[in-house]
Length: 135
Image (cartoon, rainbow, N blue to C red):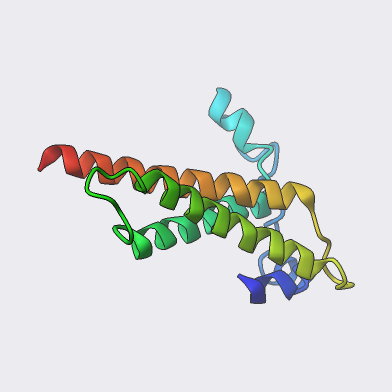
Protein backbone atom coordinates (compact mmCIF):
# COMPACT_ATOMS: atom_id res chain seq x y z
CA UNK A 1 0.00 0.00 0.00
CA UNK A 2 2.81 2.37 0.84
CA UNK A 3 4.42 1.76 -2.56
CA UNK A 4 1.13 2.50 -4.31
CA UNK A 5 0.80 5.70 -2.32
CA UNK A 6 3.97 7.18 -3.78
CA UNK A 7 3.35 6.25 -7.44
CA UNK A 8 2.20 9.08 -9.68
CA UNK A 9 -1.47 8.40 -10.52
CA UNK A 10 -0.97 9.84 -14.01
CA UNK A 11 1.07 6.74 -14.81
CA UNK A 12 -1.94 4.58 -13.93
CA UNK A 13 -4.15 6.64 -16.24
CA UNK A 14 -1.69 6.17 -19.09
CA UNK A 15 -1.58 2.40 -18.56
CA UNK A 16 -5.31 1.90 -17.89
CA UNK A 17 -7.30 4.72 -19.51
CA UNK A 18 -10.66 5.57 -17.98
CA UNK A 19 -9.81 4.32 -14.50
CA UNK A 20 -10.47 7.57 -12.62
CA UNK A 21 -14.24 7.21 -12.48
CA UNK A 22 -16.97 5.09 -13.90
CA UNK A 23 -18.22 7.08 -16.89
CA UNK A 24 -21.65 8.61 -16.13
CA UNK A 25 -23.10 7.50 -19.47
CA UNK A 26 -21.44 4.11 -19.54
CA UNK A 27 -24.59 2.30 -18.48
CA UNK A 28 -27.19 4.58 -20.01
CA UNK A 29 -29.41 1.60 -20.86
CA UNK A 30 -29.54 0.54 -17.22
CA UNK A 31 -31.65 2.31 -14.64
CA UNK A 32 -32.01 2.18 -10.91
CA UNK A 33 -30.24 3.30 -7.79
CA UNK A 34 -27.26 0.96 -8.17
CA UNK A 35 -26.36 2.31 -11.60
CA UNK A 36 -26.94 5.89 -10.46
CA UNK A 37 -24.50 5.39 -7.61
CA UNK A 38 -22.02 3.42 -9.73
CA UNK A 39 -21.93 6.24 -12.28
CA UNK A 40 -20.38 8.53 -9.67
CA UNK A 41 -18.02 6.19 -7.84
CA UNK A 42 -14.43 7.25 -7.87
CA UNK A 43 -12.43 4.11 -8.67
CA UNK A 44 -9.60 5.25 -6.42
CA UNK A 45 -11.98 5.77 -3.49
CA UNK A 46 -13.38 2.30 -4.07
CA UNK A 47 -9.87 0.87 -4.16
CA UNK A 48 -9.08 2.61 -0.85
CA UNK A 49 -12.23 1.15 0.71
CA UNK A 50 -11.48 -2.37 -0.49
CA UNK A 51 -7.76 -2.26 0.32
CA UNK A 52 -8.27 -1.14 3.92
CA UNK A 53 -11.16 -3.55 4.33
CA UNK A 54 -8.84 -6.37 3.30
CA UNK A 55 -6.10 -5.03 5.59
CA UNK A 56 -8.48 -4.99 8.56
CA UNK A 57 -9.74 -8.48 7.66
CA UNK A 58 -6.19 -9.84 7.56
CA UNK A 59 -5.27 -8.12 10.83
CA UNK A 60 -8.40 -9.52 12.49
CA UNK A 61 -7.64 -13.00 11.20
CA UNK A 62 -4.05 -12.70 12.31
CA UNK A 63 -4.77 -11.69 15.88
CA UNK A 64 -8.05 -13.50 16.45
CA UNK A 65 -8.02 -15.29 19.76
CA UNK A 66 -4.97 -13.49 21.14
CA UNK A 67 -5.66 -12.34 24.67
CA UNK A 68 -9.32 -13.30 24.62
CA UNK A 69 -11.00 -14.04 27.93
CA UNK A 70 -13.10 -17.18 28.36
CA UNK A 71 -16.31 -15.19 27.95
CA UNK A 72 -14.98 -13.41 24.85
CA UNK A 73 -15.16 -9.99 26.49
CA UNK A 74 -11.93 -8.75 24.96
CA UNK A 75 -12.95 -9.61 21.40
CA UNK A 76 -14.63 -6.27 20.83
CA UNK A 77 -11.56 -4.42 22.11
CA UNK A 78 -9.31 -6.41 19.78
CA UNK A 79 -11.63 -5.70 16.88
CA UNK A 80 -11.54 -1.99 17.69
CA UNK A 81 -7.75 -2.24 17.87
CA UNK A 82 -7.73 -3.83 14.40
CA UNK A 83 -9.88 -1.02 13.00
CA UNK A 84 -7.72 1.63 14.66
CA UNK A 85 -4.52 0.02 13.38
CA UNK A 86 -5.76 -0.29 9.79
CA UNK A 87 -7.12 3.28 9.86
CA UNK A 88 -3.82 4.52 11.30
CA UNK A 89 -1.95 2.89 8.41
CA UNK A 90 -4.31 4.69 6.02
CA UNK A 91 -3.75 8.00 7.75
CA UNK A 92 0.00 7.41 7.71
CA UNK A 93 -0.05 6.73 3.99
CA UNK A 94 -1.94 9.97 3.42
CA UNK A 95 0.65 11.84 5.50
CA UNK A 96 3.45 10.26 3.46
CA UNK A 97 1.81 11.66 0.32
CA UNK A 98 1.66 15.24 1.65
CA UNK A 99 5.22 16.28 0.67
CA UNK A 100 5.22 14.42 -2.66
CA UNK A 101 4.77 16.55 -5.77
CA UNK A 102 2.96 13.85 -7.74
CA UNK A 103 0.56 12.94 -4.92
CA UNK A 104 -1.93 14.77 -2.73
CA UNK A 105 -2.81 13.99 0.87
CA UNK A 106 -6.56 13.74 1.25
CA UNK A 107 -8.71 13.77 4.37
CA UNK A 108 -11.45 12.16 2.27
CA UNK A 109 -9.16 9.25 1.36
CA UNK A 110 -8.19 8.86 5.03
CA UNK A 111 -11.89 8.73 5.94
CA UNK A 112 -12.62 6.17 3.21
CA UNK A 113 -9.66 4.12 4.47
CA UNK A 114 -11.21 4.16 7.95
CA UNK A 115 -14.64 3.18 6.62
CA UNK A 116 -13.06 0.33 4.69
CA UNK A 117 -11.32 -0.82 7.88
CA UNK A 118 -14.63 -0.76 9.77
CA UNK A 119 -16.33 -2.70 6.98
CA UNK A 120 -13.56 -5.30 6.72
CA UNK A 121 -13.45 -5.90 10.47
CA UNK A 122 -17.24 -5.96 10.63
CA UNK A 123 -17.55 -8.52 7.85
CA UNK A 124 -14.85 -10.64 9.49
CA UNK A 125 -16.66 -10.48 12.85
CA UNK A 126 -20.01 -11.24 11.22
CA UNK A 127 -18.67 -14.28 9.41
CA UNK A 128 -16.95 -15.52 12.57
CA UNK A 129 -20.22 -15.16 14.49
CA UNK A 130 -22.09 -17.02 11.74
CA UNK A 131 -19.55 -19.84 11.80
CA UNK A 132 -19.76 -20.01 15.57
CA UNK A 133 -23.54 -20.30 15.55
CA UNK A 134 -23.38 -23.24 13.12
CA UNK A 135 -21.01 -25.25 15.31
